[in-house]
Image 1 (spheres, protein in one colour):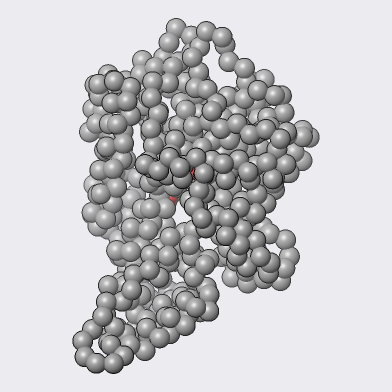
Image 2: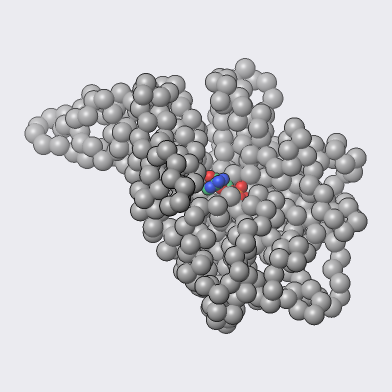
Length: 429
Ligand SMILES: Nc1ncnc2c1ncn2[C@@H]1O[C@H](COP(=O)(O)OP(=O)(O)OP(=O)(O)O)[C@@H](O)[C@H]1O
Ligand SMILES: [Mg+2]
């Protein structure tokens, strides 16, 4: 690996950059002293420069006029990624925006370290898109194109859970066979690895396109969107009978990456027409407020916070029942979200996670009882259902948490070093 290699974890929700100093990963404080940053951008309406990370989130929270975007990694490999849109007063593609985000992180890393980085070692999920190899390959080439356009000359990829395995191995966090379970914002990734006399060997890696943004979507569709008219009915313009309210707008409003595209004249007009025919007038008035004042991201953040609060409820330490505060839409509106209803909403996803973990073991030909350690990584691994499901699958394994938000970047930084010849390390792709 060339000397001037920047390790970069471009995550759905959070990103980070690091280098290796000696044999120690050094995370680079690329966001006002923090060593991770929200993968978020904000284009102020006044035409001033794009902001990223916490500054972007703050601009949104402070109510500045402009366009906020998050979870753009979800769109890699789709046609939307290269469609030109009017954002921040000029026509640009999401590819241009991801490029600008990466270029800013690169620039900050160079200012902080005094280095110029020509090569990037980037994490990638095992599958950006489950069961669609063409789209998956396109997602990686979309991301590669962004790194190149951001000024890197060479781009190498490594599976994110294999990077986390490397970090865990270095921490001495495993016995004989370890299973990394990396549940992030957009994907869930698994690597099974075996300790050897020197180093370790990756036995299998697997992943699915499922993460915290999908959990948010499900919670929103079930607990919030009905308050905005989802699942309701419309009177027919001519004649008797009722029609179901179309679902598309609610689906987009509950999807982080799609929210910015809802604030169009077309959507507002369609909503106004539906509002006239709606049986539940109050719900449609809320939806119109949300669109008129462009509050979709405020809602997404409220749902995410509600999810995290409900998840923190335990049998031994019951907390105040969680709510999703929606006072910005209507004073006092705050639907409840209990741990029980959260679990029920996410039960199907929990099953998918279990199946994917078992598939990783099957690919390696390793029985479930042979796993000595399960290591939980990624923000969504903090969901109680993840630990519970993995305990069912690997009941004899010792379960531990790695650094939820930094294990991948630490492992990527380590992988920029030449590895001992005898080890069988995870190889960059
Ligand atoms: N305490 C918590 N409990 C449950 N979920 C959490 C918690 N904190 C953060 N999350 C969720 O973790 C997700 C972000 O995790 P992370 O930063 O690891 O993802 P990412 O690396 O950006 O995504 P990916 O690797 O999938 O591209 C979000 O969906 C967020 O809601
Ligand atoms: Mg991640």
